[in-house]
Length: 174
Figure 1 (cartoon, rainbow, N blue to C red):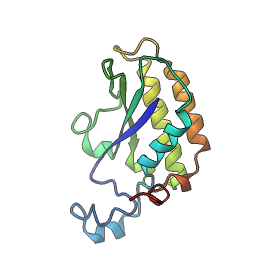
Figure 2: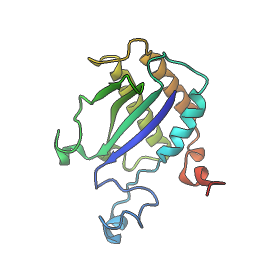
Figure 3: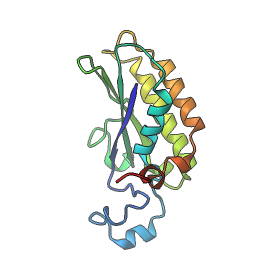
């Protein structure tokens, strides 16, 4: 099973270490006056989960799961404007054996959390997105969503935030 995360964030979401590449949207004064940051490196989480889940199988109809993770102040954006809304979105692509599902994190609730607390919120959003696939109208027939959700939850419970950072995942890579 391959696990991937696609981030879709509101412009209000500031990423740890992102001052230089997010500076087009916000001047340095904004960075100083808003202490909240998204502290996780989702590519590191994906690599960790792929190592943890590589030996497990959850059915033959799905070999890739894509978590479409939306992080925003949803109240400011409004429902359905730029984000999917609380009911989420699930899509199964049988030809490529991919399963896509939306998970959401409210920026107002997570912006000042520690990295470990944000990882817990990420875990909850991922598990909810995975469990939602079992209730979708068009779903894979032999995919065990609940077992997959448990495996992801257990793996993320064991994860150490220090190994999921951008710095830890860029060592030795060019």
